[in-house]
Image 1 (cartoon, rainbow, N blue to C red):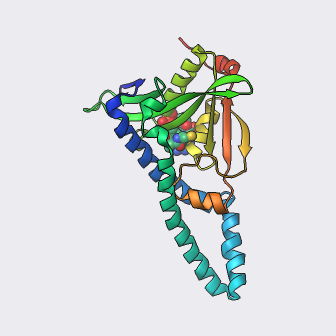
Image 2: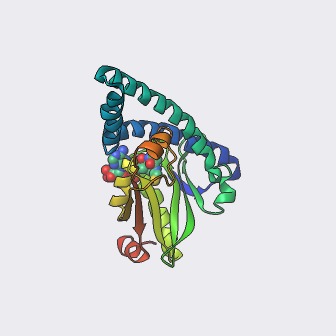
Image 3: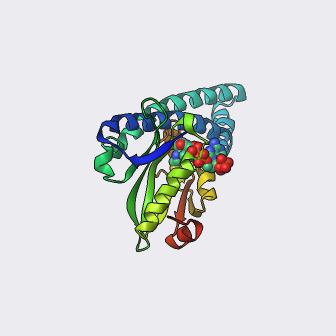
Length: 235
Ligand SMILES: CC(C)(COP(=O)(O)OP(=O)(O)OC[C@H]1O[C@@H](n2cnc3c(N)ncnc32)[C@H](O)[C@@H]1OP(=O)(O)O)[C@@H](O)C(=O)NCCC(=O)NCCS
């Protein structure tokens, strides 16, 4: 396998937008279901299914059936809202304009069409008076995962950030377990776990559920310049 990191080209914008959108639909749909069955969401769902409806109905059986129905309706509604949420991310509709010189793709040079198999964007962000590079739209296409491409792209960003004297910042949600593992492994410190409401969740099922019913955890990570230099040596 031979992989090359380079800037996105104009003719690839549509393709990458497609990968990004599909990734969100597929990954988050799957992860939302996992999220449902663990974490704190369970508590909130039980509040609805286990107490409120049966109590209102005065009959546990009807209450449980009704709550299952409610769950089904919520999933359907949130699927619709999730699509709306994707459309809100205008930055991904015109990538080069939104991230001039700051949107990188990984090309699989051994594939016939030199397929794009991963991508990452950065943009400047001030935190406490210092300039950081914020990571956005970071994804590895499903068939290419667990081969070190995520790590490779992060190292690329680290290298660029180190050259421009910036630390690295990002935020993600508790549903992105693979990403959480990766960031922790790459030396990021978790600066804040935010239990508040909606920030920037681009999920399909989670939109409705997380915004209105559950509380979603938002993790913020930071890798200050000093730590970045200590951790990684760049050529
Ligand atoms: C998160 C993501 C970018 C990781 O990319 P990747 O190329 O598969 O990651 P790597 O192969 O470089 O893995 C590096 C480390 O990340 C962690 N990791 C990666 N995938 C994981 C998974 N499915 N489960 C648990 N840990 C995982 C592991 O610690 C791994 O190290 P190891 O292989 O030595 O165990 C990829 O899974 C992805 O695109 N996910 C969907 C989009 C997303 O969540 N993006 C981040 C938004 S904030």
